[in-house]
Length: 242
Length: 243
Image (cartoon, rainbow over all chains, first blue to last red):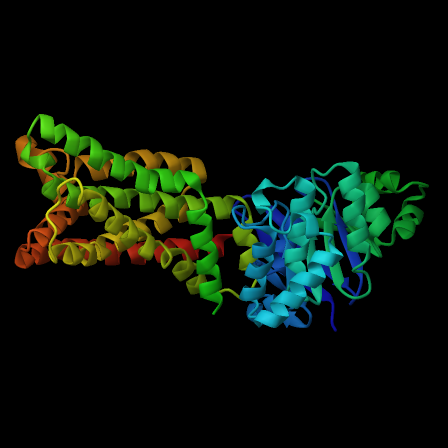
């Protein structure tokens, strides 16, 4: 299993450089958080790594495959839970999961087993036959992550997975994300300090498309000479690259 | 096949939306009922059930455009497509997955309109079958137009453009509600350049058993269908690339 490596990765639009010469290495099985305020370039980075957006320059290797030259191979390795809730609203929870099974060409037996496993893992029993569009934000996020895991991805991208959730739903989702540690490489984008500190093996801090610092929460605190993570983040963002 | 899985999902999304059913079926059937009742009290050749029904089937197709455009625009806005773009689904899987389920829906809508018109006095003959088959090119045009609008516009714009503008264009320029020759001039010329009147005339000709006349009206519809389908495919693939 290989992780992710970006080489001078750039995404620019007419007047804006959303991601600027990003060089980053994420180890297999690691839970890596990209932390930054709105517009930092986190989502654009995820979009490039998941082959949704083409880089303007540079390249990235996901599981050893190039996102620019081998997108089909990359897509077979990854699972994505986008920032906005991305479920089919008029389909039931079960049908949403079946849809993903079908897209990944699972046999009927394999689909059944996979849905059973994900239902248990994400405690979806009580809502399995309810329309996804009628569920609360917390349930929709759970379903969204479960859908991303259908293909048994080596690498999972979670773009702001707890955005807009209440404290309880957020903590429940954190437990689920923690359960993936070690088995799956997880790339999580967030602007919640607590989330990044609590879940991540390592954290990358982004601002205006630039990666300012990378390290564990403890390392970032040490680098900035602060005792709490939020202060470390503010210090990194205000002072620029460390 | 991946495409069929996606197509199945699109079918469910459309059929489970009560607004789609209300407008797609309810509205054309209500018009049939209303106008045929009107015709009984104030006889007008245009609203004779044998003339009216083929026209209403063409008008009903404008709602198919609305369904297809709304579904695609909603998928784009909700990031559902973003999720699917990161799967092994190809551009053609998406295009066919969106378009194919709508064809049987459009044909079913036409069948239901003809069946509904029988108790209202519609002449029953084999020509109904020809008229149902003859609706297919116009259905393709309407479905492709939906794909095009859904690829370009957002949900709100689609509501305005397909829901209001297109249904009105289809109504005014198809000659279903009034004889275009009565207006004449520039209006009639514009109507003849667009496919709506040709679709209504094709249906009327097929229903009346005039195959030769139907074929002359079918040609512009087929040309429009090919052009709009090609444009829709290009626009859909372009927006996919632009993500």
